Amino acid sequence: MPGSGDFMRFLTCHTKSFSLLIWRSYCQHVVPGIQGYNAGFNPTKRALDRADKEFDLIGPKASFQGSALKLEDAPRLKLPEVAFIGRTSVGKSSLINAILNRNKLVRTSKKPGHTRLINFFNINSKMYLVDLPGYGHVEGLGSKRGTEHFVKVAETYLKERAGKELRSVCLLIDGKVGVKKNDLIAFEMMGEFGGPFQVILTKMDKLPKPRHQEVIEAVYKIKEQFSLDNCFPHVFAVSSTEKTGLSELRYFISLNVGIKNSEKW
Image (cartoon, rainbow, N blue to C red):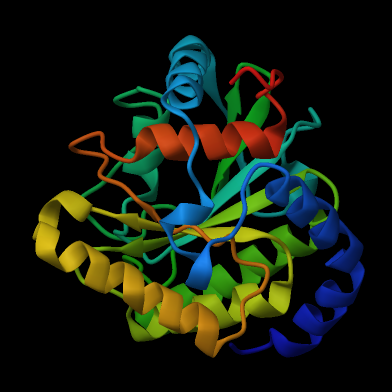
């Protein structure tokens, strides 16, 4: 990606110890299965129910905290952050709304690329969910300039937050259309970043069930191709419309930000 190499090499060195710390935290709760398949992430039904109840409680208390292009303009309250990145129209806004059981907390639009700033959502003063600009076609900018804008904003955010507030990054892939060329660039970027991230396949309700495993397999092949050891082994397959796969994602976020405070989960 243009202008990203030097920064990412710098960031990789300075986030190594942080990445190892978070990865060890992951491994306390999951044991990667062969080829990283679903056997590596098996929370109990009780754990999933507890995660759903937790988000039922904190979702209504979530609020838009503010937007920033420069991080000096970001909210001052220090909380754990989970960031969401992906192509424009991949469904970031819809997914955040669905995770929180909210309909209109995050603004959605039929025009791709309406998110151009970093948007912070305060979740009951327990964490921030952070919506970053999408890459690809952006209304008014086009694809090339839209992706360049994403690179500039995302690099700045990752540089400033890695090893501090940022706990993990959710890389969203449109399950209906599969992995596209600019998604491959995003995978490479996350590999250079070096911090922990996980892949979330969105819009899985629009994909015939016999093809679900095919798309998941494609993601695993890409992870192997790029040697993405910093990518969480499990691929989350979700539908914001059908509300499927959200319990697992809520549980995972709870682990990352520390609101899962009892081993009885």
